Amino acid sequence: LVGGGFTVADAYAFTILKNEAIAEETVQNVFYKIWEKKVPGTIQTSLKAYLYKAVYHESLNYLKHRKVKAQYQMHVMHQQNNQYEQASKKVMVKELEQKLRDALNALPQQCRTIFQMSRFDGHKYQEIADELGLSVKTVENQMGKALKQLRSKLIDYLPLISAFFIL
Figure 1 (cartoon, helix red, strand yellow):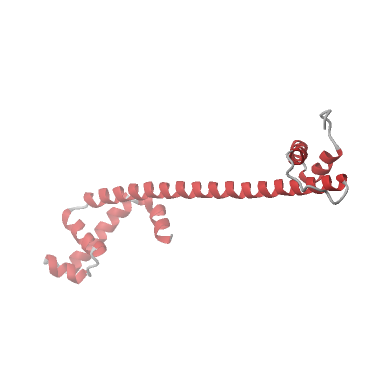
Figure 2 (figure 1 turned 90 degrees about the vertical axis):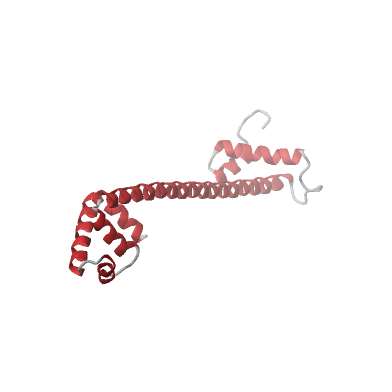
């Protein structure tokens, strides 16, 4: 180590870590801990056996730390993707709502009123006819006209509308 060469301990760490630079750093950490006296006061085995065991455990700790770090990074990426998707969906919903409002406002007044009473207020055709003083057939015709116009104006958004109703 003093000469900057690759030691037997480095080679042992390399067999575990499969990375020369990390193996050297791991061995350096072991020697640093010994130097800082972060080891038991008396070593019960030979120094060589102790060093091998210390390098082994330091290597495993590194691998565990790397695994936890990778899992955390995946979690952060997943969270960021979810936030992006949520923001993207909100933008699409706002855009879709505006297009729907524009399409509804483009309908003739009576047609729009009948559509809103049916789809938004939940009235049956007979109730709409009675309230507006129209025949049920007129209400049916106006609904057909409204649906046809809305379909043609929102054709580009139908896949998006379907996706939101399926999810």
